[in-house]
Image (cartoon, rainbow, N blue to C red; front, side, top):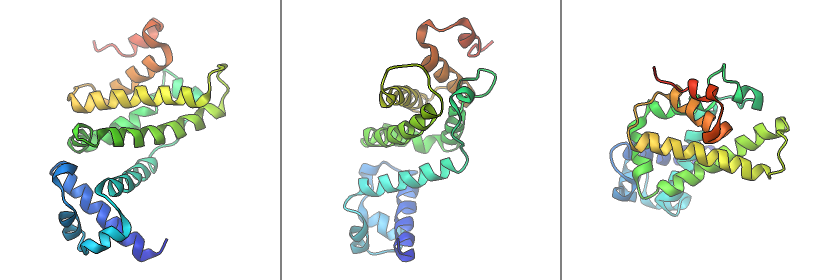
Length: 195
């Protein structure tokens, strides 16, 4: 992609993210985005058809920034109760700008954002599952979607309800529920105890 196109798109994405720190997508108009990005309205429409398309592009950028600090683990590492769950990195990342992500998940575009997150997560989970056979006859995309859905559900609940659990507590609880469900071994729940 041409450097000027990348610069223009980045300016529009940054403008939208800045505005989303102040108000919901529904209350942001294209003119505000282009003024903050110091570009013309017609330029916006050369690159994007809607604010939602711009947001999806911005979500790719947020995902890329997160992935710079995250290594996809093996399944054995991910399930090792002696180590923090890999999802702790995601909870830490979200905590850094909790109010912003809470606003996104409470907006009318929450379903769109959750779907985008699920797509990212499913791809990464499938990558982990392929590294180690886990002895199930279930399709890997079904297993990955189940894990991603549980994780995203807990993220949305944690953010939108202002749950006071730490990122480590949320990651440990999510890992225990995914791995063992409600009938899991006592060890899974001892990891989660808040004495």
